[in-house]
Length: 188
Image (spheres, rainbow, N blue to C red):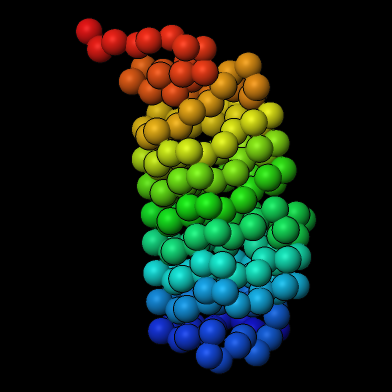
């Protein structure tokens, strides 16, 4: 196990991670794109300005870890270890990623780009999508109770196919809830 370590500007695609368990470690401007993180454990870790695009996350455990301004395109989070899965995303680009059937209660996705992200059958109770762009994101049979979409952009959520009880939306975002019904909304 590696604890309390700082990694900065390291290209892990050339020099693979030497251990699989990281506790309270900080990764800044590191390249982890496309590497195999199978069976790795990240607890209380932070990733800032890192590229993890295309990394293999099979049975990867992410517990109380934060990703800030990271490029994380095409990641399959549904393959992560589900026990205590608790990431936080701030200002990240998560396009084409997969959260199918993930439990993400109270998960934070602030100011993220989430184009074409798969959230089908995900438990997103109380999730915060503040200032995030959800263009083409798929919510199908998702639990969105109490989720915050007030400042989210470009989302499309069918209230008949998702549980949206007590989810919060701005009146300007109502078209994202009504588009599947063929309703025409005009600005007054």
